[in-house]
Length: 93
Image 1: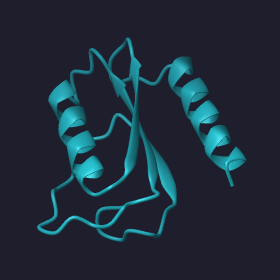
Image 2 (image 1 turned 90 degrees about the vertical axis):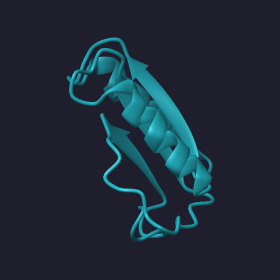
Image 3 (image 1 turned 60 degrees about the vertical axis):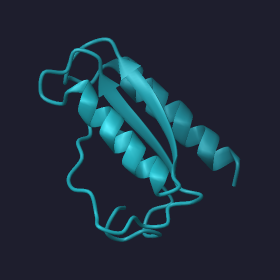
Image 4 (image 1 turned 180 degrees about the vertical axis):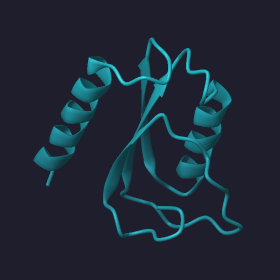
């Protein structure tokens, strides 16, 4: 999304990290992004989620965050939240 804006209309990112920060931010207006992060994730620290959120929001994306109470593993709450988020986006079309 940071390299090829417009290819995806939205994304669910589980335990994401900041891969890089482009010199020039893409235009991501109208792009919804769900970040699903673990509060006790020992691989992806909370600061990474905050940094990624800021980068995406500066690019104009509509960012939502779901906080899983565990670590790096995915929980049923992650799956349920992603499903609900995706269904709500599809119903708006």
